[in-house]
Image (cartoon, rainbow over all chains, first blue to last red; front, side, top):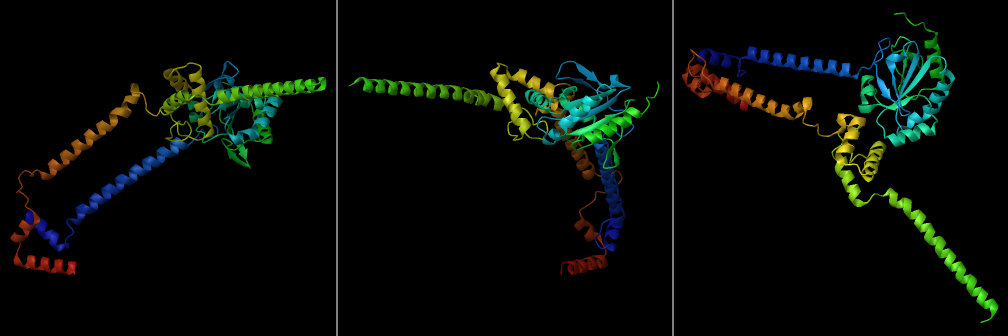
Length: 203
Length: 176
């Protein structure tokens, strides 16, 4: 047995048992590729937020003004969910537009919800006072809602249709499940109008 | 000293006293908010001790005590406010966990699922050591029904002369 092994060693010029080496190498390679693939799939799944047409993740938000609001109780209404924070500079660009459009549509079956991402209460209240914000706002305690919606930063805005599904937002003509930069009054109005025109599915 | 001189002195004194009073009042008013802004050193030290146990909720792996961004500055100011209101460390940390989630703690509490974070490294170490030991033992163990495998030099001695010569030649080629 040992002689056979030695024989092979010599005929192959010192490369010990090439078949076995190739096999071990191939096995390790397959293992590493499999792990990387698993990692990629996991990362992609973790990074993907709610898709267009999928049910919007439900949540209950304790409001700064007192009381609470639950998304699933707003079926039949058009809901705009805006993630913001008092320390977020770009949020200041959209804050007046959000309040303006809210006042235009609040009596037409539209609800605007401000979800405050990581904030200090006093600073948040100052911000809400500064922009005279009257739509419901609350702190996302423990960042649970932000995580469910996989936000990457603030501001981000989602539209939820009358059936509680994530609706399309057209960003420069391309359909998106959310708007990542400050949203304009025009984008808010056109999105809301389109969703108000939709019929609610019965059942 | 005539009457006009007396009057002049009196008005001078009055002006002096008034300006001193205004001066003092100004310092009292200006001094008060300045004192409110800067916490006393003991409170600040206590704040940093607590902030050292917390994370910045936005950045990855940065302590609240060291994080320079706005929200962290505000959170540190809130700790000072709460300390000045007489709240204790536990109360403050509990309030922060409620607002920012358990991930605001830089050490997970040793309870429930989080026990895993403390136990798993040791479990991993034990598994690795056990696996390593097993592999070493498997390598060094003689396979049943097989002769003891001698080191390569011992094998070479048993080889025919021709092989040994070729091996040495090729080794020389290889080294040169």
